[in-house]
Structure formats: C-alpha cells, structure tokens
Image (cartoon, rainbow over all chains, first blue to last red; front, side, top):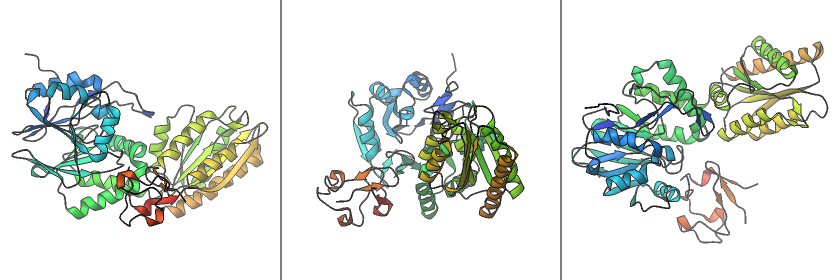
Length: 401
Length: 53
C-alpha cells in the first residue's frame, strides 16, 4: 500500500493534515523564497473536528492525509480560525464531501466566509470569545483575535493538551518536510518568523501587545503552538512569544536601512557615503538597492532598525517607480519609532526628494535631513552626504540606548 | 457632523448613517456613542478612533 501524503501525529488526539507548498514564490506581493505550508489539524476524539482547511487546489492532498486516520465523513465539525483563502479556499469542497454537522467561525468569520463563498450554502455558526466546544475527552475554547491579522481571526485553545491553534499568528512562510520548528535550523525559523511578522502583523503591533498582555494575565499554559503556516512549535514557547513582544514594541536600534535606486550611479554614490557617515557617527547601516531587493525583505530588515533613509533619482519630474513601490508598501505596514532622511540626484526639476519626504512624513517618520545633487555629486556634495550620515549616526546611537 | 476613522482597520463612523451592526441610530454623533462602543469591523474602543481630516 502506498504511504505518501501521511498525516503527522502531534499529540494523542491531534494530527497535522495540512499541505506543503514548495512552489509558491510570491504571496500577494510578499516574496516567499522558501515556499510555505497551509496547516490544517484533525482532532480525533468521539467528535472528529477539522481546524482550518487549505488552498482550494490542495484539497485532494489534505483529504489523502485525513483518509489515513479517519473516514472523512466522520468529521462532525469544521472550525475556521481564519477566513483568508489559503485557509478557507478548500472549505466549500471539503464541506460538500464531509457534510459536517457544524461549521464554526467568529462573528466576523461567518460574515467574511459568506462574502467569499456566496455561491454555496455553508451552515455557518458564530462562536465568540469564551465559548467552548465539548469533544468528549477534549475541549476547545475560542478567543477572537480581531485584526490579527483579519477582522475574523480567532484562536482555538485545547486546555487538555495545552495546545493553541493560533492561525496566522506565530506562523511563517517556510516549506519544510519537518513538522516541528525544533527540527529546522533556528536561524531560518527566526528569520522567516520575523519576515512574517514584519510583512503581515506589523500594522497591528498595538493589538499584538494587548493580546500578549492578555495571554500573560490569563495564565494560559501553552506547550504547543499549532500555527497555520510553517512548522509547529513544541519547544521554547516563551522565546517565540518573547520575539513577538520585541517586534511589536519596535524599540529603535542603531541600524539605518538605506534603500535607493539609481539611473547613472549618482544616487548610489550618495547612499554609500551616507552609510560611511552613519558608521562614523556611531550607527550601523544596511544598503538595499531597489533594483534587486524585494519590498518584503526591506520590511523585514526595517523590523530591526532605527532609521529609514531613502534615495531616489528624479525621473520625468517624479520619484523613481521602484522607490514609490517600496514606500507605498512600507507606509501600509505603519512602522513606528523611526527617524529618516531623503536624498537623490536629478538633472532638472528634482522633485523626487520632496516626494520621499512627503511619504516619510505621512509615515510619522521624524525626517532629519535631505540632500539633492544636480547630475553628479562633486567632493563638496559628498562631504555634505558624509556629514548627513554622521548626524544620523549620532541620533541612531542616542535613540537606541 | 464629524466623521471618525478607526486607527486600526480604517472603518469610518459616519454619524449620518450610524452603525446598524451596533444598533446605533442614524444621526448619532460620535461623542454620543456609548463608552463601551466598539468598532464593528475590528472591535477596538472609541479611544482608537480619530476625527476624519
């Protein structure tokens, strides 16, 4: 008998029945160079329950895994912790195969699922924070986590196993054959989890802090975090939660992220000299050329920074298009506690630097300085860039203490 | 009457329409909303709203 597409047993009653998407490289504008997983979990007690589903096209693979444990018609309840299509896309198909007695979601989840799947009848029921579901030998308790990261988002907790089904929270886009984070290189896990936080959860950092305080105050014991993307955590839970607190607090470091693009090398030269100045002043700098860097990697680096320094040449009286891309993206992520600066070269007009300043100010970034250079920077211009860097470096060192 | 925007999710409270999800009648000023009013989309309280510019 063939034994591919096996489930993975997490505890006595809980199995991972999700899928690994090795291929995906672009996740709605977020570069996923290590692929991802869509995690779904099967709880096998007297009342078999499925937590979340997968992208629609992966349903057969998930059903194969489920079929190796139970007959799919045995599933009596499906819980949707998150209505985004990578977790709910398979729901209509699975529901029509399984015909569960109940499909549960938060109030906003019911609404959102109806708005996604208006062509089919799903017998959706609302649950709210504090509601419980008796599965015989196990219990599930629900907790709404609105805007972490969609209005419908919800946690489901199983006290008997101290297991938190956390949907997208504590997740990462990382395809691995290993199902537990402690079996994967720790640097990769940290890196991909930070990237996920920076690109998905950062705008809701204040709510993250409130949630972490609430979890702490409620003394909820967590031994396992079963997230919706990437490997499951069964060790070092306090560390994982500590990372979230650190990222949500966004305390400034002494690192400046310098993003720029260039047409004939002038703005590039300015970037390098500003970076040298920043080191001289006591800060650190990372230069990311937008000709080859991905916006989602800039967001990740910015998670551990204290400054955003942006350079753009003026093209046809405008900011360079790659720079508009990254600035629009970062603005949506609402980073906090940053200082900034703007620079760039131009031939005539020279509007780009003012455009950058406008974006930075809209992001509530404290703009320290700006520098425009006509055509090609001369020695005096580069000295000014260096001075600008030194002052930024002082401020970075000061702010990060 | 002034509209208010939710700082978290961007929902706009428009007094002209009120908020049917929370049983708020049309014509209710933001200041007159109950203290425990919550955003109908993301659930944050009144303190997380700002006047629309």
